Structures are given as C-alpha cells and as structure tokens.
Image (cartoon, rainbow, N blue to C red):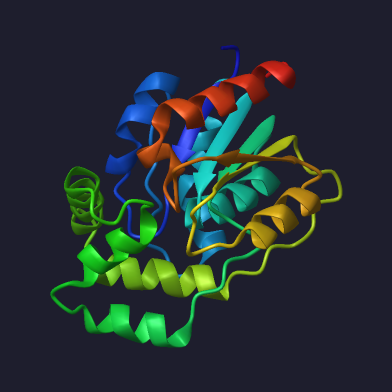
Length: 218
C-alpha cells in the first residue's frame, strides 16, 4: 500500500474499537483531542498529520470524519475515508443533556446504540471500555462540538470514500449519501454493522478501503 494512513476515531473514543482494523491496515490511531470545537481539534492534530509521509489518506469516523474534513483544508491530503458520518451530524439537545448528567448506564446505552447486535456481550463490553478510557466529560464536550460543526464546501475535494453501516441508527443513509455527494465521492455499504463498521465488521471494512485505495491508485 503506497499511501500513509491515519485513523481518527469518533466522539469520546480512545480508538480501542479500531484495534483489529488498524492492525490490518497498519495505520496509527489518533484520538480526537479534547478541544472546544472541530477546527481546534484539527489544529491540535495537524503536526502529527504533517509528519506522515505523502501521499496521506485520513480515515475518520463520526466526529473523526469532521476533523478529517478540517485537516484536509490545512494539510496536503491525497484522500479521505469517512465512516458513519454525514455532511455534518445532528446531535439532539436532550441527548447532550443526558450525556452531561453522566448516569451510571451512560456508556452501556451509548455502546448498545452504536452496534448492530445490541446483545453481543463481547462487542458491547469492548465499546464500553473504549468510552470509559476517555470519560463522560470528554464525551460530552466532543458531542457538543460535533453538534455545533457545519462543514464548508470544498472547491476541489480530495478523492473520498464514504462507508455506511447498513444498520446505523445514529446517521441515516441519506446523510451518508449527502456527504458522498458534497465530496464527489463513493458510498460503500457494510452489512451487519451499525455506527461502528470498523469494529463490528473489520475485515469487510478494510476490504472496501483497500479496494478503493487500489482503484484510486493511492
């Protein structure tokens, strides 16, 4: 694989759920910094991205996809793989208030919403551990920043692949399609996956990414 890849996980994630996919891709995981807004998050990661050899391809999931969009404006990026994301992501006020309260079952409920098989004990436990590693306060700040972010159109967007878990309850297909349209990119579905296709179906997700990288000669 000629490109240098980097993974930016989602809101409140330490990147633990990317373990299998990151290993298959040989890509580092750069968790989203604890900053007040998406542009500031991108600015905090910029030096690490610029240290990657070119050509660079950024893989961003959910909030990480929005940070990747901002990084593509600041650094030379040959391509983007955006997962579980739209052209902006809606975060409801009532949901934010609930996260701010940090109830005891917060991470378990967040984890159940993010995976297709809500009763898979292994997947559920792994997703909970990932959230616990960053904590409720970071998750709330991340989600607030995500809800406030509105992307600006690119004059010349980099080649882009948008990956949609077919059972995603957080970001509907129409939003994924809008993101692909705005970026003049491709949309690829992943079966038996929800908001974390890279975690639930790592091999299928990596195969889609590798196919696209080869097709784009990246």
